[in-house]
Image 1 (cartoon, rainbow, N blue to C red):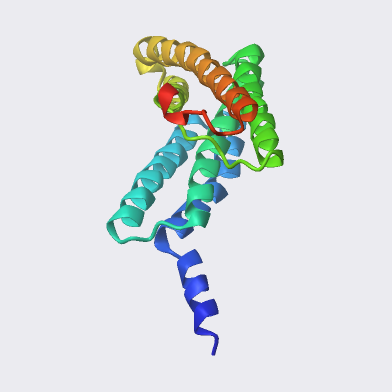
Image 2 (cartoon, rainbow, N blue to C red):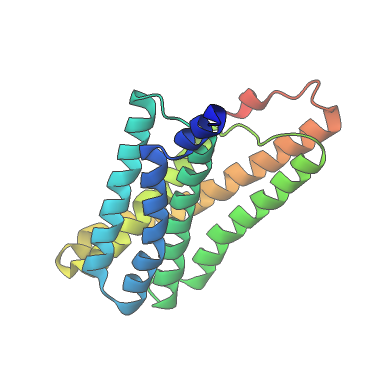
Length: 201
């Protein structure tokens, strides 16, 4: 029996990876509920997804189950949930389309930057703190807006917080994207010799 192949398979079928796959499977369920206006159930699905996100990260670190696949699945699930939330809220005229387009276009912009880097033989740039703060703001804001839709009684409190974080997060999201582009230009210009990715962390 090919023990190397079996070992490789076992490293793919880890508990964190299975949790990430389950979270990915919840994305269309969440969006369907959101589009139907079943905000309470959508919020429950979002809460379950958030819990599995925290759980798979804990298990991966605690039991040394960090894999390359997991490092791809985890952020993919997060981004898809954010995309589903943006599109679902915009389709219901809760979120303006311009804000959804602003946030989505930044991700498209970074995909183009990533393609440029790959074409020049470079890997992805390190994530800096501004990008993490922007992502946190957006991930925090959208559930707050959904919470206000699910529970109208708390909307006077959750909506202002959600909108503040959404607008601030969108601004920081693009600011981080521009810094990535500047860093990419510097890296390509200097051929990597003098580039200091840690300077904008």
